[in-house]
Length: 534
Image (cartoon, rainbow, N blue to C red; front, side):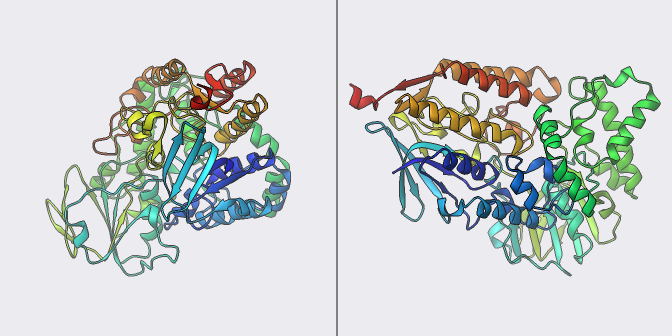
């Protein structure tokens, strides 16, 4: 029997475990993988890399951790990030509290003793007072149901299930399906080494240069000396990135100045074209079209073939899908061994033994790489088999979209506190969620200090929060009408519902602080299990 169980040893789960242990709780973390890192353990495909500055993405709560770790480039790659999270876990002596190879298959609430029972796929069972799912929002890969997929005799693999030993693609005929952030990173990385690369694209994305660079010793020292400045910048920004929108509208400046701003942002490292653009980028369709016009011109400058450039130019407004970052991605299509197929114009008919059959041709391949993304935001939580009061499942409760209060509580699921889930803190991980993890610890300490054995969130408070999240996104027409994984649009049959909190992170923290200051009035609580109290 444990005080708390954290599910997931990724970026969020590691920090939550640390804080709960620090607070003196008996806590265990259950991790499906064989090591820590979450996203950076599972996603080890060629080119996997951060699109947030490493020092603005990772932990900032310990000066010792900062001093003892040297970042070697602005945007760390997957192997570096995996090493970093292992370093953190060992430096904080957290590994002894993590159970690996522990894939959770069910979490059942027992009303008679106010305890959660957690079952593992191999038959092991754990019991806990507080259940804290921290599985992340990108953890359940989506594999399209193509006809004939099982017939393919070559290597087929989803990017989120890349083997630890890697795959030698040298001299192979490779197909990549999907050009989101992952597909872009793979294409630009493997194009120089494969015999032939066929990219099958459903929807092109507005990608801008990552502009990564290697650190000098002086830059390493500068990052360490200024980590509090970087931390404050992320804490004060809307989405916990280093940048905020500039406080001026697009057409308030002259055309030549506007072009200069776009050019500066385009060549600056990281997410600044998105995060540091004019403040009406997503609220004014004409302003958005002006930014998209600039980006389209760059695609046509960088891609030699006009027809290929046309296919690579998106039709959707900029940033209504999460903007990827790239390194010579567009130049890959200038190579003679790279072909681009637009799936709306030439759909996949089936997968054959030798390759892919479209409506126009048969493409012989040795390796099929599926970069079709995830059942995002809710998928990983729904896979946990969570059953609350009266046997109601989380799948049933979220059938029409997620329903939470502050992204942390769910009515009918007592003593459960979600970290990094839907309708909660959203943006640059882990900077967004470290505050929430701290708040969860403070909430548990309050409950324990006041003898509260069982709590459940008020249903009306949850309803009001869901409505508020919906009002925020529907007030922005460009986002309200978007088709993306934030709406569940990438998963056939998934109910269309916006699954994130789109407001600012400083505002979100103010709301959480108010709830704590008022004594958590949205939580119904009792000093004994319901059955025992009757």
